[in-house]
Structures are given as C-alpha cells and as structure tokens.
Image (tube, rainbow, N blue to C red; front, side, top):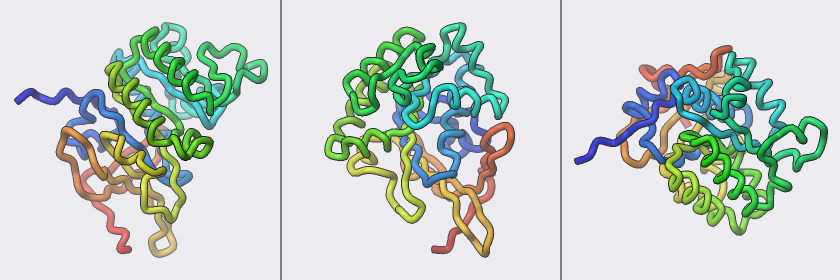
Length: 245
C-alpha cells in the first residue's frame, strides 16, 4: 500500500487531529458561521506553506486584497516579500478592478460571477507561481450569485485545484443555526469537511473545531476547543468539548 503524502497545515493541534496533516491534493471545505475563524485558519495554512517553500494563492471573493494583507500582517504573517519573490499571489475577485489600489493587483477578475474567467485566473496563477496551496474565500459568494450551478462550480474548482496538484481550502459560510456545511451538493464534492463553531454554553462563548470527513486518512471524531491568539489559531487536540445539544 502506498504511503499517503500529507500536507502539514501548520495550525497547532490540527495536524494531530488529522493524524499528520491533510492528504495532498485534497480539497477541503472549511465551514462555519460568522466570526468562527475560517479565514484566519485558511491564511495560517497558506503562511505555513510559504515558510516551508510551498507557494500559495489566496482567492479573495469577500474582501479587498489590501485588507487581506493588513489582516494577515496582524498575526505577523507578512506576505509581501513572498509576493515580490513570486511565491504568493492574491486573485482579486472582489474589486472588479475598481479603485486605485485594485489597479496594482496582478490577477483581477472582472466580476465574481464571471466564473469561467475566475477559473482561468486561478489556473494561470497556480501555474505561474507553481502553487501548492490554495484558499478560496469564500465559495458562498459563488453560490449566492449562482445557486443552481453551485455544485458544478465546486466540481470544476476541484478538477482544477486537485488536477494541478494543489491542496486547497474552500471557505464556506453557514448561518449560526445551520447544521450543514453551506450549499447543496458542495459537501459531496469536497474531499474533507472541517467545521468551526462558536457556541454559547452557560452564558460564555466557546470556539470549537470538528473534522466531519477527510478522504484518505483517519481523524479524530471529537470536537476540540480552540483559541484565536495573536499568532493565529491554536487547537487543544487533547481536550474535547461537548455542546450537549
């Protein structure tokens, strides 16, 4: 039996939960409600890759690329030097090229619902910087604009991302009360699903993470507490949290 090649997420506690990391080429859905830390986790995964000579791409559908850089800098993840060296790229599917700052972006999609162009841009960026990791934040934007073709879009993304050898996270927004992972058919296309939650227990908010599925590896079946610190997300993989619902 061939040994499965794994990609270390670099998120303390997450690789332990995943028994060593994410199987390479997997496309993982990172689902959760607002404020649960999905974007931070995705950016942390990318930055860890950069520090280990794995170029990465961040597809920004919900935030200005300038803001993305500022947010990452707050955790000490300075991506500008990697951008200058051609090891990191932001695909801008947010500004549609409007505004002074947007004119300086290299990969700009004219509109987030112009899906064929977006796919081409992602392909181009992956090939040009030889990317190994990709984060799309968020796919929810895609299926809000085109709910009927959501599943097709995700399958197409998967073909491109896995086909070009990248290991990827697709961020998916779900409402606080929603049990699912965001969008019909999207769960089935993903190789893995990681769910982040923020729950009120006895009047206090607790953050937790659970791996619902991960193709190609055994994983912890427990819900684990985590914290967002000034260095990113830290998961307590030795503790489990019961929500009691």
